[in-house]
Image (cartoon, rainbow, N blue to C red; front, side):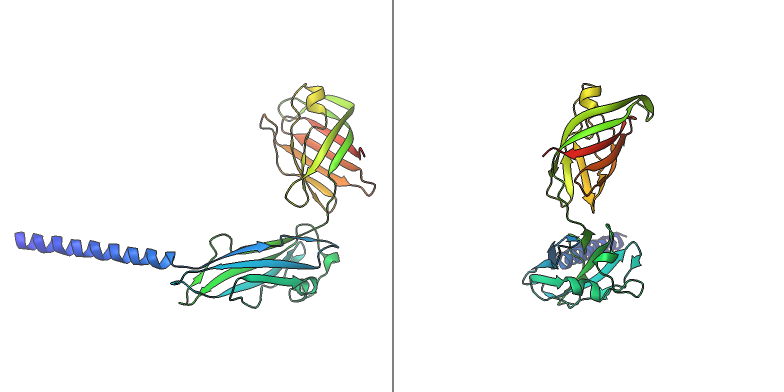
Amino acid sequence: MKNIIYRISLFLMVLSLTACLEEELLIDNVSEGGDVVVSGTSSYLNGETSEVTLSFDLQETSSASIDEVQITKQLMTTEGNSEVVSLSPITESGDLVISTNDLFADVPVNGNVLTEADLSPGDKWVFGISIMMEDGRELTPLGNPEWSINFSCPSDIGGIYNTTASGSFGDGSGGEAAPYAGLSAQVELTPTETDGVYSIDDMSFGLYPQGYDDTPPSGRVRDICNSLSDLGDADRYGDPFTISGTVNADGTINLEWSNTYGDAGTVVLTPAN
């Protein structure tokens, strides 16, 4: 009996040791992989962009060599998406420069090769990235397996604006408590590091400081081809703001805003300079 127990114990020890070795080998194989870091152009500006650049930083070790990085491209639009096409693979770190013509030429949508005039804000090119190792493995970049270039328009609305607003005070539950009109104030739109995104020092356009004697709620707005929208920012009470508007040819801005407390306004912004 003792001999049987001894053999069973010995078998379990060997089995456990084998499993540990296999697990360590698997971890070693996974950790010995290459990677690629992608950076470059993220916005295509209508009327301004003539080429885009994708920069590839291939990262490998002496025991994990990259054979090539495979790249695909697809144009995704509000009218439909192109087929996914393969670009020439790269085998070393460097830049991939693509002209405007080449961006459109091989990705027709619904059978038609598009131009800038056919695109709308929100359309984008999506580049897929795959890493092929010399040992035959196909890996996904650790950061992001895709890189997007978003179609947009040049934006230059930063500055100080005089504002005139009318609207309503909120009742705390999203409804209207009392109206207001002829509210004059001044706000500043400041460009951020993100193209087309501006910080705004008062999303209430004077209502909080003048109507409530409260702190102006700061936030952000996004300008895409003269169409303004909010980015979901909230005041210090946690009430998010909804903002939508239009940039006019004369530089003025018409917009409407509201929050979940019930405050709301219709505003005209006129450049102060």
